[in-house]
Length: 415
Length: 136
Image: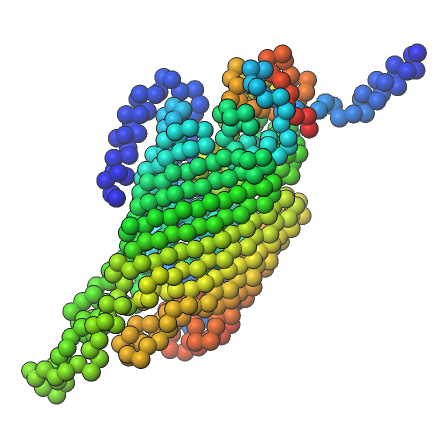
């Protein structure tokens, strides 16, 4: 999908030139958002991360870490007359390669076919959950980060493809729907080297209904997932070993003997190559102004393989006392896929697959100045039995299934 | 008689300086809007009037008291909540915040000229080119 994105700038220039004289509304808008946040963890034998794309975090690697929630986003909006517009958004944040190299999170062209009906092409947000569209924008959400029990599921932040967005009202109900098709990708750090996740033949649909202060949303996605990893895919990797009928005899490698772990069926089943993956989520938000409550449940499923299949949910609420908004969140996630196997090679691959945890968070947001908010949040996280939860870089002294807490202080801004 | 006039004048002064009204072009077939319908348009949830015509909201400057009062009245949202609301829509590429105009007079002028526009102004700014569809 690199080509449509590369084609955008030149197309944009042509459209701009064609409509420059006819346009009265601002044709160009530059804006941005960002968060500066520090997090500390009571668990010093592993690192906390807010998503699969972060290689390290507070705990073992750093005492106070600024990479969990800090980021900067810059956006350019272009209008080419009544029917065409374009958005380009770049984000710098803590990434898989331990750098803050900016990447394109959005770059699409929008065609308004009728009032309430638009088509877009290019790079669009991956709207798997209620606030996925703006999960990078701290100022737009009540917490320091979206609950990881639901939002960590999806490592991808964008879809390259085409979509249709529809909006309509029926009495006091405002409906909005989206159908999207395309592909997605994400680079993920792993102990075995960077993994490249690719979601092909992606198709998704969402529908939301707003009645007064209440919004309901449902989302379904299906794609073909592939994970490319140099070690896992190599001739000496675990899957090659499962597929070898004969292996060298340890005492004399020149002699080949039958492989006791030979099981090509298991290799095909667990190696993630074009496997069907589905996402399903339902969300609810009620915000009459003085207070809010929000709840969401999500499930990842599909072909049985090395990918985590899990169910998660959260419920959160807050009350606004002028510029101060204290909030409480409860969240939980359970693993649905197998976490072990009779075959020791598969068992070793699945060892990191258990991520069940639950957490209770309390925090406060303070809108102390125009376009600026400060937040403080305390999370008490309980990892399920034998689970490291959202923690990575487990050290020898780390014990799974225990509790720890996080303290985060954040400054959010928009301009 | 003098007493009556004085009392009436005093009553008038006691009322809020003047009411805030939601206006559309006199050319727009809409005659009346509910608070909910108005909120849908101004929050970016509805793109057209119930009569089918395209709807586009016009705002006043970010720091004007009239704007603050308007969003509190239709959606019970303060300036920071409105900023967060449009941050959601703008930074996800879903929609852009309404164009903000410097004065009520400018809003009245643009609304009068184009039936797609809808604005909110002080009742005293209303001219024959526009019609009031909701009084707040």
